[in-house]
Image (cartoon, rainbow, N blue to C red; front, side, top):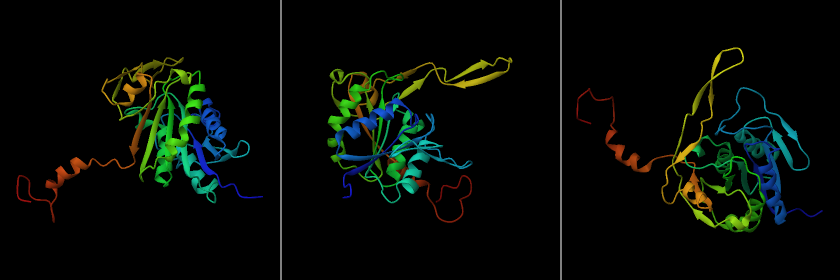
Length: 267
């Protein structure tokens, strides 16, 4: 039997291996016939897990048929287990995370398990991509599947710099409704009533983190502006969080030797 020399794609997510979104992404990639696919995803829902690793309990791998595995941990755990264990002798050429149920835009990329899975792939030196649908309760992945079938070869052919990844937000609904693609920057949002007070059946108070909606700044060139206008948003992200402008400005705070006395202007 001749070896399969097709490019190898690792697919993960944060909604769990049974989520409709990861099934849509897997369907889109497999239908092209030009890539090999391995799915390694969390066993259950892991939304807003960010880039957390499981360090205080064991991880288990559960097989879900040929080339499909669940990990009893976070999205980051899943990609790390895939790279270091499941695919150690057959590493992927690309890592794809999603399709997430709900948008990952603006500051939410910090909390996102979907983006974290792609970022872990980037940190492992593999070109990586995070995909999300802009609807919190998506009902029609047909447009996303058709879009990815047409667009993936082009985006994978575009070289990513080391330490970077792409964050893609896709409309919910048929492809005919898509207005196109925009390359964007992260927007900015404010959640309302993020923490609410609740009372359990025994009369004891507790807190619930969730929020009652989000308000977005309507800035031009942002991911929010693009998806709000019906476009697919593509935002380049990078692992390096250094603020290089401020890094240079703060050089005046440097000195050698012990700290100077309070009020001493000499450095």
